[in-house]
Image (cartoon, rainbow, N blue to C red):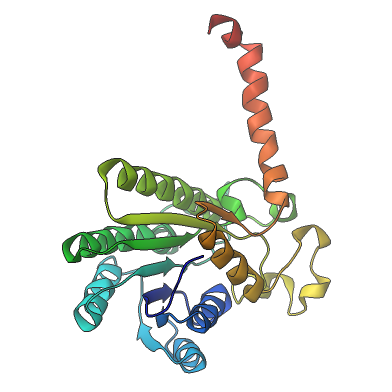
Length: 266
């Protein structure tokens, strides 16, 4: 079990939802939290709730994340963990989407490149300072599959950004391990969680959402995230159905391999 006592932690996307729940629970475990978000009012509320610091941060600016890491290291002498939780939604059907939309560039920057830039900055700081750090990147059930409950929602580009988050996290973990870098990498894979990003599309009462989404509250997602870290997991899912949703892809590759006669050639 991780001893968070005195650990310096940065949480992005902390104005509400999973980020706020993580901030509260980490402080309860003894961590010293800096809550960051573009929403100044919301992140101030989170900081007040958990007795931590508030930092207004727009990860659409590629320099903002690394600057925040440098700022916190300069102020506190170290930064032990980053929860790269900030993310935005994007709803455009692929066959109608404008792929030059400025909103799409913002999606890639915040959802994919933001966590990667934070990981780079955190690893560099930890290596220079002589401590070990960890980064927890928030992906999605859409990182793994096309969940039946959202297949009519037109979120293919958002899902692509979350697929990107997963493979980038896997590569970050692999590069860190192979090069002996002082950075542990984990990826949180939430299914349906009642947050400010999901609520507008489905209504304010989670009890009325589609049953197959298995909606949970942010506090449960944060609890599972911290449990996964205690267990040393890389993939940290929040719903059992994620494994079933992935099965069609594995089965398709297995069937294609057999149909092409590749097994016989091995």
